[in-house]
Structures are given as structure tokens and as C-alpha cells.
Image 1 (tube, rainbow, N blue to C red):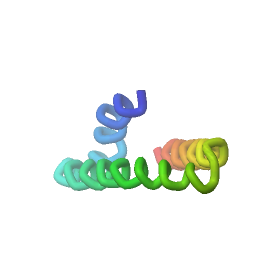
Image 2 (cartoon, rainbow, N blue to C red):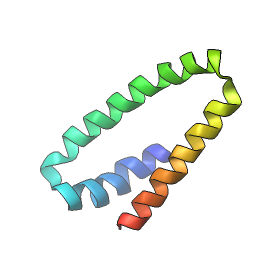
Image 3 (cartoon, rainbow, N blue to C red):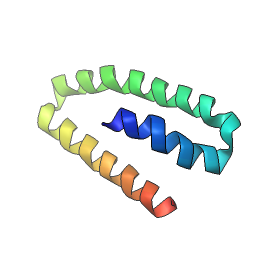
Image 4 (cartoon, rainbow, N blue to C red):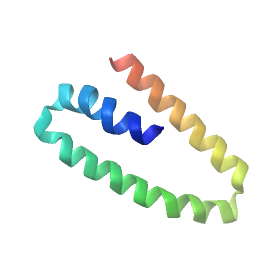
Length: 73
């Protein structure tokens, strides 16, 4: 569901309007890079911290990003 939101609404509304359509590609590349780096990092941290704290931290970050996106629009 998050991928559908990102590819449809986020790229059109937030990136396209704020930075112009010419910058959609570079923002998408950095989004993919962040996803590619965060997956192994979270797996590494689960070994030392545990699954529940990582899931709670990721949910807090996700809610914070969504609140910020809603306040920005």
C-alpha cells in the first residue's frame, strides 16, 4: 500500500509541485537507496536490539513523516 501511495500521490503532489517534475527521478533514486540501505540495517539491528523496539521505532518514524507530510500540504 505504501508503494502505491508513493508512486501515485507522493511523486505527483509533493515532489512534482514542490521541486518540479524534472527532479522526480533523483528523489525516486534516493528513496530507493534509502530503502535498500535500511532493510539490511534493520536486520542487523534486530540481532542486537530485538524485533519489537525496531518495529516501534519504525512506526514512530513513519507516523512522524506522515504528520509532517500532512502539515506541509
